[in-house]
Amino acid sequence: MLSRISTYLYRRPVQTLLLLLALPLIWFLVIYLGSLVSLLVNSFFYLDDFTGKVVPEFTLRTYAQLFEPASLDIFFRTTEMAAIVTLASAAISFPLAYYSARFASSRMKTALYILVTLPLWSSYLVRVYSWKLILAQEGIISWFAHVLRLDGLLRWYLSLPVVGGPSLSVSATGVFLVFVYIWLPYMIIPVQTALERVPKSLLEASSDLGATPTQTFWTVLLPLAFPGVIAGSIFTFSLSLGDFIVPSMFGNSSYYIGKAVLSYQGTSGNIPLAAAFTMGPILIMIAYLLIARKLGAFDAL
Image 1 (cartoon, helix red, strand yellow):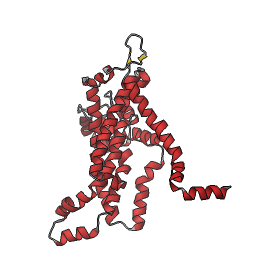
Image 2 (cartoon, helix red, strand yellow):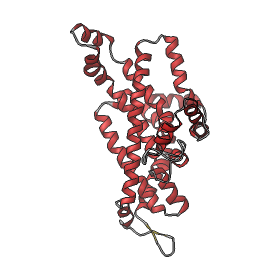
Image 3 (tube, one colour):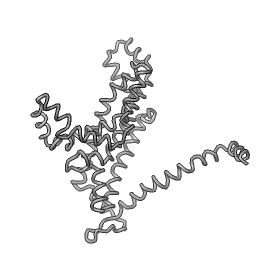
Image 4 (cartoon, helix red, strand yellow):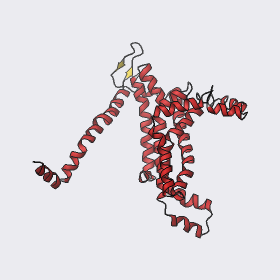
């Protein structure tokens, strides 16, 4: 019986492939796409201000609330933070990835891989809470500032209106630092993969033709490794865009998209507005992915 089934499947590779993909495809279509469709449908409903109940009637009044100044400010703040985190991650990742791809021995490269991915082995919440202790007013950074007699400089920085706060653990700077730490491995690995694909002969040819190291970097190395940077930015940008735990723990009273969705859905019960808010990052990421595809980012994944 089993041999007959095996023979039947062997002679019909298309049916075999469909059987193998059936369960994942069902999961993807029902659970993932079904959830997105449910969000989309709910975003066209509205919350009755008098009864506090969701009215299942098609309307655009919920989407109109997204164009109010407060909502636009949330979108701008979140997108700005995600972009800054992405740029900082790229700037930090490139030197390390370049060293690992070009100069590190196989043993050193393995060690660097382990060190880069080591934080991912622990719980996300553990890593976030550890930074809560590091950035707290009684944390190690404040202690170092006190030892180096930089208390005044730290207090001055925290007094700045946009980046400061009561402490580093309650400020936009704290959100930025934790985001960079959390998502940095997702930038390093694609950049290193892209750099390893750059032929060494091209760099040597550029040098032989009289180009300086700076010219070689800007005209040869960076353009060829740029798809890897874009591939890494897909992770860092999208994950920063939708995260709600870090802004909730380290941010001040300013809302980010994830924090706003959690508040509207959990606190006020305004599910239509929460669903409408989630459509914003989805549209942003669709546009971002289309641009990344044209830049060849998927080749470096």
